[in-house]
Image 1 (tube, rainbow, N blue to C red):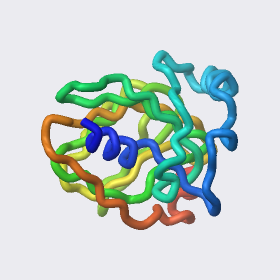
Image 2: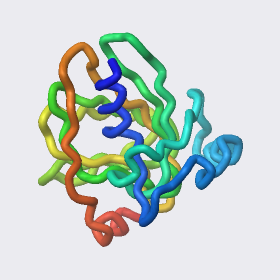
Image 3: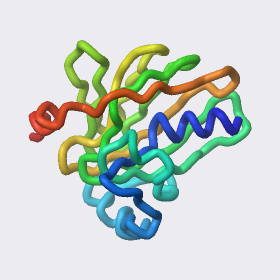
Image 4: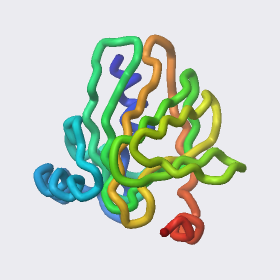
Length: 170
């Protein structure tokens, strides 16, 4: 279970910056909830700032694990103002993303990005290079659902091209 949670955190809830961030560098949860209310609100807890794997994300994210000790791990992930993952690959499990609020994207390598808006469900197959997160300057939340009853790992790769990401601005 510990390895799964570490993988889930690495897979869906990381931030990156030029210097190491601390929880004090993040806006208070109440401020995030207020901002989310303008993006459709949230029904799940926002969780805590996730600074442990910041080198694999752009921007700030929060993680709220919703299950523990189960064969399926579910976490609520909150992306602040355009935060998104680097390209990465999950081994040993697929990843199901359920968009909850705000606006985001997911992209599989070699394919066009798919817009994620509340209610959209997207499955990333096991072993497929992809990225996901908020649209430029938007708030976004999704549930991340992954199997935990097997050996899983994540390979973190290069950042999403900044010019390409900005081209997604609407």
